[in-house]
Image 1 (cartoon, one colour):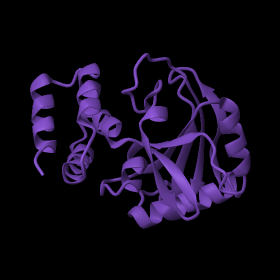
Image 2: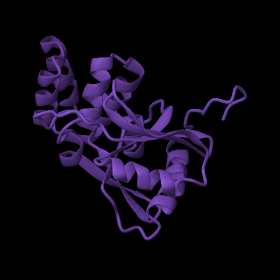
Image 3: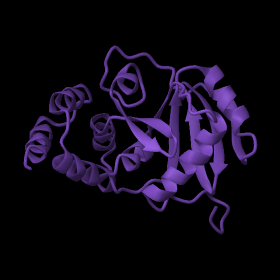
Length: 199
């Protein structure tokens, strides 16, 4: 927490690993794995993208998973107990872990596509596993994260994502499909795809 009592931003990948280890040691102490996805900017940072991260977002399928996770995190300060948010169509809880805000939720909207970061099949089909201590963290694919930031027009997030993907590679057909479905300007789409093909 900062001096105003607000959760602070993460300082980098080492701190993210620390926070995730604290979380997972409580939620999944035997490192058996359970069904969730790390989404948001934390998913990008976990994959090596250097960008601002204000919180850690964990997506789950079932409300019962949110409840079980909240119970496992009962030793940490709870900022929002599990509750249904009708406008967002989320079952949502928020905790503070090592001074960092951690949000755990479902997203209960249907979508007949695999290109959305937090809705439908996308996060469950397009992800990578990142080692964090003795845990393997399933983090949503950078292609879906990039399109979220393009739609939000957050330059300080999408530029580092693009540079990372330019250097490390990307699933360009998935990215093209996702940008098209999210109505990213066609000229911008072509510019981004051109940039990502320059190694």
